[in-house]
Image (tube, rainbow, N blue to C red; front, side):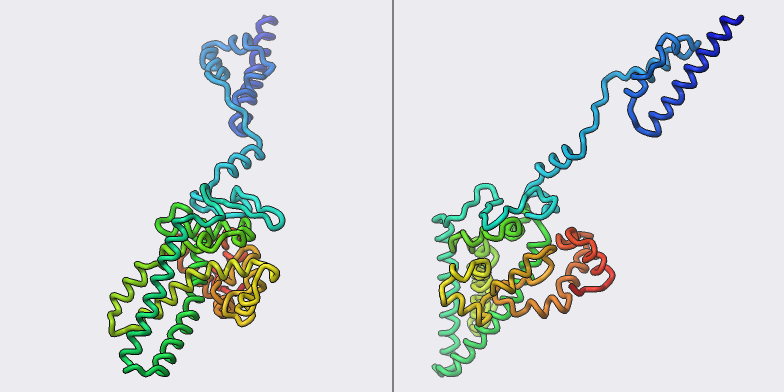
Length: 354
């Protein structure tokens, strides 16, 4: 009887220990291996009548459980798996999978991209700009004919149209820059190449200064190319030559904005006196003005033709209002919000100031 009591006592003790370990497994998620490494002898558990098969199944897993990878391994895998084609990817920013190089180092982020102009790029850009010039001269000639050859009147109308187009182009460049910096990725139809180029620019701003002219501007010839100006001129008709002139100049300025942008990243020693004069006259975006855009979270100073609209747009909260509208419509957050939680909170609360 004493022997049986001792056995029963030992068995009960082993069972209690087993249950406590099973409980620890379920609450702490320490894994089945914690039980299998237990010091409880299996022959003692087996002595529990009618339960040996069930307990054996519980403590003897069919396959070993893989040990969890440490956090640094997971972060490395997550970083290396990201691509400019992925949704939500932010070029050159924390968590993007890219590192910002130190100093004036060029970095090409698109596979197959280069800094030299290729023949097809030169042909594409040349054809586009020559076409826009032809539309402009034809519009001025038509306008002169409509004015009965009155040169002074035609000159005033043409200059007024060109200046207004230049001003609106600066506004347009800001809206375009804001949109491609904050939304979309390399897979976005039509605009994917432009989006990846603009977002990639943040990872190595100096790269743009190494690009040759046609290589630098050719992507913008897609949305602002010949079909765009031709379609608008056709719809306006020959009786509205100033419309054709306006949009020919507008599209030319949008294409050239990328070159103006490049100049804004170059040092005075790299620029010729004519370009420096254009910057001083605020006819093209200046270095100091644009440098403020490259301060995280990249939420202002988007206009890159001349920058004349930047102060008005930033102080009025124009882009923050657009971001809130986009978010309310489809729930998509701007990249600026992803970088600055306080900016997101302020904007959603109706505070649009920077």
